[in-house]
Length: 415
Image (cartoon, rainbow, N blue to C red; front, side):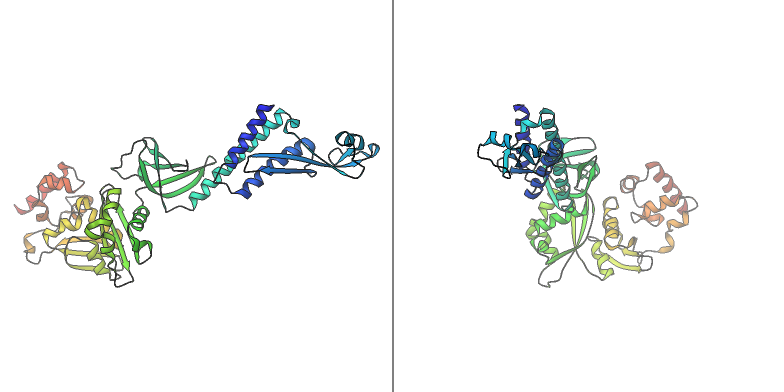
């Protein structure tokens, strides 16, 4: 019996050591568990006092009963016979209250085991609820922890309080590589209860992660002097960040980059050398598109506000810069501005009649193939023929055989 009693005290001690559970909640749960025990044993808990010492991790149960004449004795929970009271103390008289301690051993072994299981169960429930509520309020904030386990589809991270966080593969930057014991930072994107346990999902690919990193590195953003208007990114490759300051004395782009790139370097390292373009936001959409396509220099552009489309004209040597490696620059510029951007070579100095628009070949070349060429700025026959097969394979998602077939069709037009 002593072992069960000791185990119960240990469970109680574990409970009081949980920093995540506030004192009033702890008191309420403990009292609830012990009063249920009293009700099961005696049928009521009304005549009992509980003294719970949270700091020491122990408790006492005291029973209050009124002394009555032996023949008037009716309720053993609220009354005690005078003869029995005299055994405790000779001086007791009828009408007085007798308070005696109820020992845990009196409840029996099975009852003590039941209390312990009940208490352990309530502790776990409270702990889970506490973790869930804590992280629910931290959605969108950066957390860090240590890699505990690496699996094929996800990584298990443990924070400094021992809470488990999950970093799924699709929320990792493609070049991320972690081993057990590594420290990882990410932003909380989702918190839910799964199988009655909190599931905390962390991301390193979310735009919120980049936004929080800027807040950490750039005091002006944290203080609200500079506002991040929008972030778009292709994790691990490229990101564009539109920033604005309402204080004319502050250069938002310069403040974000820092002296010789000192502020942005830390962010780039954290994101595995992700190329970050910081752009000065403007409500002038033409100027905003021009800035978004940086580093390419634009000659002119035409806007269709109804269809949210923009046609951008550049010198031939600027087209590849505007499109970027694998189309990343133009894709992010479109996402940032909200306009579907198409880039065209400026042909003012070229003889238009000598070239043929790709659309003229729509009966021989599939529309999706034409679109793939347009995505890299090749919208005419000659603009494709000027490039090598190897270049086109690298810059498009087309097979080499398809490119060779297309070039054969285009060459035949000029023969």
